[in-house]
Image 1 (cartoon, one colour):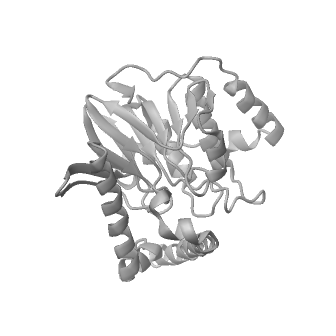
Image 2 (cartoon, one colour):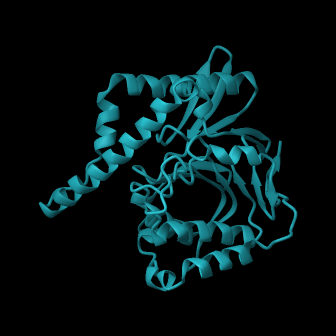
Image 3 (tube, one colour):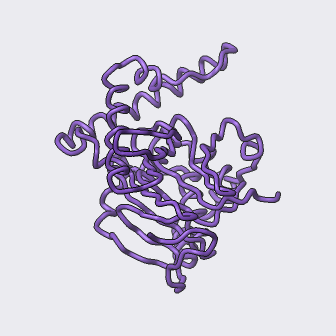
Length: 292
């Protein structure tokens, strides 16, 4: 199968290691494209809720695929979020084409692009971390319940529903928080003369132009791989929101879990370490993208 080329791919809020993560669908998507640059914009592995008892084969296959991109010298930027925040202590770490950074400023075809996860603007995260972690556990539980509801719904001939989306849409404070989050991000981006600002964190895919008294900026959010199954793609000088639900090509990709499951954990780790044994210094490839 010929893979679709993507100049820049931005993924966030995958939450590997949780019941709600759609790792299989993400793997199908990744196997259907050929990105030139990858930005992992936070909450890739959910360290908050990580458990040795739950790490399915498809979750490891996603990790292995991403490491495979690094082995092929595809530039990969990892921007830790709140759920994988322990990686922030490795800021400026380089391994082959992988770079860990807390925020990213790029110049793409003369446009300034600011990329960061976004939890720094979450008041609950900054002042009540225990409450945020409790909310994460409740959210994961809701996703589990949602899976059961959808199974019953499909058996009865109805379509899927998203309980978490319904909760967010019905709670005014949640809508208010999202709006305030976007306004704050855009205000700061405009003040710093950015043309684009890219976030994750709030699981709300979006591309929109924002104009204030101080200027204008394009706000973008890559969404998540829990509910929306979305990413941001930049190709042919244009940004767009990718949606797995609208991609029959990715949906048709066959994932051979049996072959992967036959590999012992020790053998799999050995193969990952072998792929990580790269010595190429980190340098973004040409094509209209450079570090700002």
